[in-house]
Image 1 (cartoon, rainbow, N blue to C red):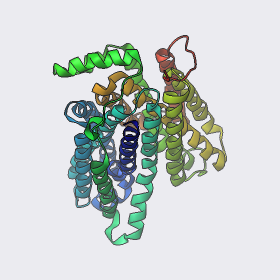
Image 2 (image 1 turned 90 degrees about the horizontal axis):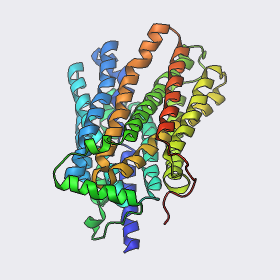
Image 3 (image 1 turned 45 degrees about the vertical axis):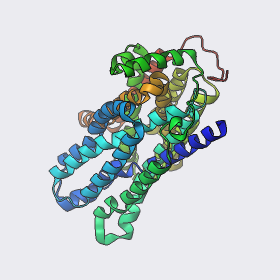
Image 4 (image 1 turned 180 degrees about the vertical axis):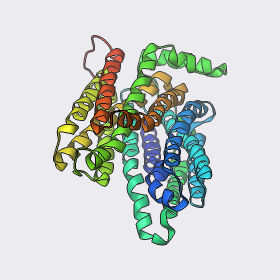
Length: 425
């Protein structure tokens, strides 16, 4: 029985992870192809900003809604719905000639995209017990990090190979690949052990078992989980950690290349190197940090947040002082490593807080704050640059946010922690 449980657990994880490796093709192709789209259908700079920011806003709102829907009506149905809808919507983008239609489709796309990750967290919560879930979440989030790279390389490759289609080809061939992996997930993944004729795992941590029992009563009574999640002040601080890490992560993606191209960096770094190095660092960071935080070493995830935020803080402060390309790329890699390491811990915490009953809802709240941060990033740093007219000011503001993350980590950190395996009893 245990052998069958482990087999289905890994099949489900791999099916979801490989699908998610292509999910960002449906989320960021508009942003990555914007210069080609704007040149073809005459979109102004202001309209471009609105379109690129819209997906973050709708994704944030959608996460809040769809996490609960995944808990209530079934995560696998929500994931497949999101995957199919985002595929269809992206293919619709390929035939657009008007910016208002493009904006509407991008907003809808963000909403349906938000179904996929929160549904995945719900499914992972059904298969990965305390003491092991850092491994499962870390692997899934590794493919999330690599998805940034796929979303950057694949569309450019398609456009280069099929010049006759122009930017529109980036919304057909790559999206067809995404649709294929959505189908494979639908065929092979099992939402919960009961769907494979297996018994669910038994919780190992008493406080989680008690919380899950309470949440099952809440679910049976038809109530929503929001007040129970926000009843704990620590959960609110975790929401701020999600928002701040996302602001810094997308800030680095967008502003590091600009600084070294247009600021005082004197063209030391190409945008392509930055857009490839940061996601690879993110992927390995979330794999290693989440695995360690949720499985091997720490019972106190707040300590890991403090450590990763401190590393990010140090590296962000060093960027304006670095003047050779190799050092810049190393710095970008390890900043992505640290920031996305924090991101991975969020989902382990979401499962701990929401348990198997409301893990999607907890992940939805954290994801809503994360993508609200991504939305804010679209406006914060351009305004900072406009006010101070100096790229150094962008790094100063980012440094402040990293310091704020350290403070949040200190607040959520448990006192008198002994460094032991999280659960092995």
